Image 1 (tube, rainbow, N blue to C red):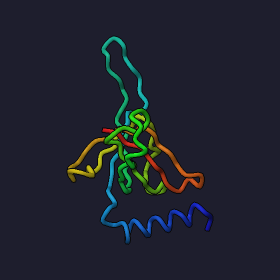
Image 2: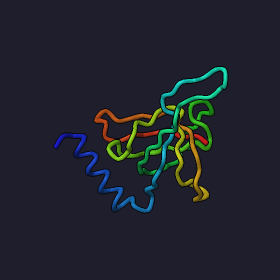
Image 3: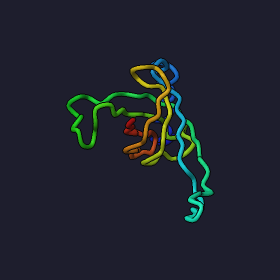
Image 4: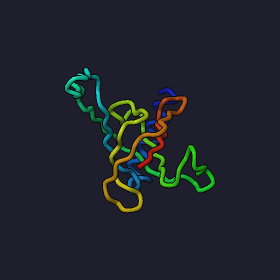
Length: 126
């Protein structure tokens, strides 16, 4: 097993056991490729949906700078091999809100992946 496999196996085990209460399913979506008709102002693009699971966390108050990280931004940590598509800036993610426990939709502000490409750390904003 390589480093990526080790990390993913350890994180998957933590998601299933120790962090099971904190793990949330999520659904991502974005508009796929299509052709824009400027006359009718319509597109042939279709919505693409993907899924995954991860742990949501709020940012430490000392990291909130009002520019790059805003109050209310959350961090999603998820396994790369469990996400069925590649998260990107502007995608919409629907998951459980940390405060209310209700479904909430967030926009991906900054997706990141570790050097071993084992897990994503994604900044979300309402």
